[in-house]
Image (cartoon, rainbow, N blue to C red):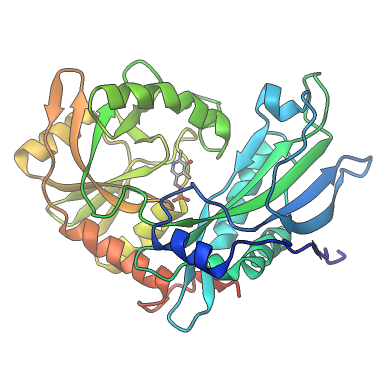
Length: 363
Ligand SMILES: *Cc1c(COP(=O)(O)O)cnc(C)c1O
């Protein structure tokens, strides 16, 4: 295979050092974007299609035909990972091959073209090289990378698009849920699911998020921070939050997370935590866990901690659970949750030894 060369068109008026420094002091999450973006186009042909015109350009508006398939049929997938600045100034990311593989699993489900892993990794190196000064160095800070792919073809017929674009944008990030690590409250959606049998639940696609917005709004109306979805096969077992996986820490040293059923998104954080938990000597179980077991476990004290995890928020304790008129109070503990969070963040930021070879240097 020939190596893809990126053309580089630098931004002519990037933000000044002072303006950037002010943003990096308190970047929030997903509000501000760096000076550049990466694009690669794909065009279908008789041989299956090819990626071409890889480029780094100034960040800016897209020009899209109003009939572009993504705007009508939602043929879109995305990824999310973070770049961390280490103490020596170098910039690293965490298990990007896992994101590359997941992007391609999502692509397969949505009939989008697969992107070669090397091109995915190159696209991350390119944007971080162009915007390396945007990688913050503060505690809990990172540069959030958002690769995504969408059907750009102008065509209203219903079939997989023959013109597709892959892009990467980047956004400096602080802590997802604000400064302190306060437990989030959760509300059970009994009316809606984010995914169903044979659907797109295991794919990282905007459509699943669209399905989660109304229940998320309902959760907020009930005074909860996040919505939790139930397994549609059984209707009584926990699946995941709108964008995060869930873990239960038992007093006897077991750690349980819902098994992958095809409707749950396979988080890179989830799989990393399963490994770190094994390293810590915890017994790991991937299985169904019902709301009744959650409630009973918290009441009896058998479940000591509950937490959510994902790239954006890393690891966040879950406090109370609202299910209609029932309230399951917080499990209370955070010892294992915080240990896992410290360990994971430590590896990502270079403060803890990378025993599993998870880090990849970007610049
Ligand atoms: C991205 C995502 C997660 C978390 O995955 P990570 O790879 O850990 O960031 C969990 N659930 C859903 C629905 C997601 O989209």
